[in-house]
Image (cartoon, rainbow, N blue to C red):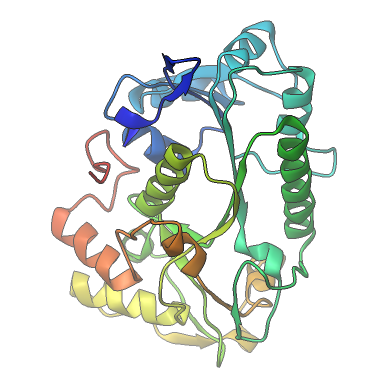
Length: 312
């Protein structure tokens, strides 16, 4: 896909260059899908993560909230910007740096990674991108505000902005197999509770797809099947050939305030808009993803360089 991701300006081919604010788990998977010489630069707050970024094919840059001259110079060359830094009470560091950079004449597209948490609780009903956003947690409220600011920034700069609202992220190194192996898996049961999920390969694939098309708008990046979380653990245990942990009633479980807050939001999230945009999910549900990870045996590691191949 990256082979055709460049654009044309005045009859001249412009080579795509990506700049990523916050080159974490999902964006490293995105970079590993780059099968061409498309340049990808990305930030981290920790210098000790530079090697991991390089292995993923990302030119590492340090960003602690203050934009260095090197960072601004790299940003000035970007044709595509991906933002994966969560805002906090102090503000949106990525947006502040973007504004400090001034006019970016080569920039053609912005992708903002958000969360389905902005919808809040809908009592288990289906929601799509037209649904009311009524965040429950402060972190989701901040995300909803950041979405609007990035969309407004794109409008002002006449650049399309795609907001990707992500469901619960899993993949190699982050999944029910790992939790079962290390003894942290739990089967909490709250009647009627469901969650959507998304495999990291589909986050990466959706990003490439929307970036190539320079498509703007809001898209739920989520699987086809909202399901009770205890079912996922049981299915993984079956593949491993081990007994699943005993079910625990949610009301009696000891949970951190953050963990308990997740169970305060119940909704079924539609991915119809993403499919209408032409993206085909690699993993439509958790069973397909767990089956493949178990078969390929790559579930323990956090996405080795050859673990994810970009769809052709």
